[in-house]
Image (cartoon, rainbow, N blue to C red; front, side, top):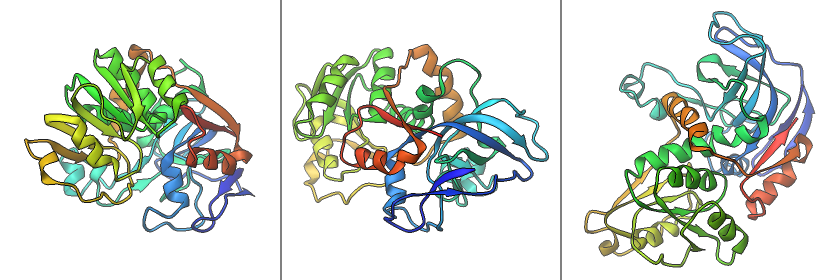
Length: 327
């Protein structure tokens, strides 16, 4: 197999040849056909997430075909198309797993972070955490749904029944959530980097009723706002944008420090909450709803060998929608 491997914090990924991995009991091997590139991959690259054991293969928006099945696997067969998400394993015995909150498991494994991911021609997955995808839709278009879509969906659910929804950071997750929100009859207000007219125009094409820079105030108070950009300074901005009793949902796994802000922008029962990971039920729910909502992902495909260039484009805001690597 070939893989783009992270060997040290901040180092460029290296293309390496490795022996094809062999699945153990309860595991499947997947021949990767597409892997989305996510901002979380940058957090792994920059060691902004703790306890990374190098070398590691990033990538957690994986679409591929099962080509080898380990022992005790009855849910997947060779040739099945599956999707492998960020959450790769949970312990099943901690209080969170037992209470239906496996996304908060005390002993989880995460694809492309604490176990090798999809920036490769092959990868190993716990069969219980690989979603069956069927045959509808093409691999590149589906790949961003495996994280941007799933985390987007969970954050939208946590935003409640907000009619006027703000989206801060109109990238891979934002453009998917905007489509679901419009399908649900909500009005979308899109916040982008200052001066990013391309992203603002993109948001309007997807039905946003308002689009502007993240430092601007919308033309009407919002019922809720979701922050996808990893910028802590957006939290006070979003709190100022929501109405009394409104919610601000922080959807990223990592964010820069939140600056101090006056209590009065939190007062009047505004809520500030975070989203952590996802559950398998989130995935089943979202993958059922995605075709009903008519979601069309905006993707640009790149070769696996171009991973470093793609990550830099993502870092500097040069990707419209989502980038996907093809082995």
